[in-house]
Length: 344
Image 1: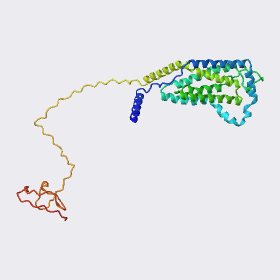
Image 2: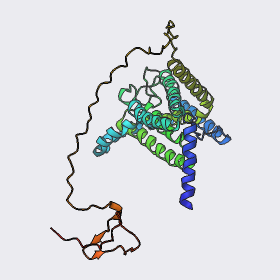
Image 3: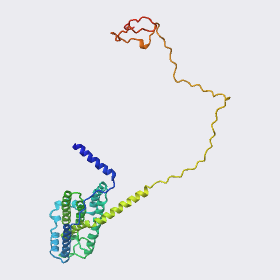
Image 4: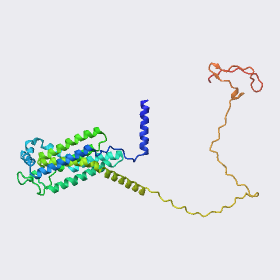
């Protein structure tokens, strides 16, 4: 019974897929709840606090210089090779290609463009916000610092906030944002947090970023992830517009082919069929050769012959047919007893 129910359910699912192959699958869209709004506000306050602490050259700038003079890449030089590879998880190109491949497969399986459009929207926000902050504050990195103890702001640099860290938060966090189940969302959130934390600390280890750059990069990436639900209406409109454009393109490319008009044909006058004249000789028929070869003459043994129906079947043990004294053979003669067959 259970097997039959499972087969029935599978038949219903396949029938539904056959009816609606182009219908986008339902995806759990995160809502802009009160908790998310509060978290967004707190992250924005933390972002502004980091910027203010660096601008006024507070204790955070002194901590940046202390970490830089500590030179972690010299203190733990044995892990330098690993950090060089691990920091690639924060580069825009490799991470975008890997995540786009996975989300593209999901879009194809679920018949929806939302995963790819969400990734594009998040990367666009990342370029605008982080790029504008980098150019606006113009901070130099540790390797290009000029004055010990200064915040190195407004000197034409592009290091604040950390682009590697913000990109790691957004690129890997988008997988958790688009997760289809709460359990998957929790596991992916933890994995993306650990990955982005490691990428940020890797840049500090290599000396390419100040510690405050990494803190601001974490906040910048988290702000983009928290603001994505506000972009969902625009993503839905873009998806509907793309599907509509696809349908119109298909309708234009697969239109009906015009059928050519039939060519008029002149009517042909038919002559009436007349009966053959009585005086006309009949046509001679050609002799038809028989395909079969003539049979050879049959030579019968001499002696009286009986019909097939009057013969008595016999076996080496004698006749099996009972005797019928009332049956008389043709010709009125007396019935003769059957003789057993002998070889020869």
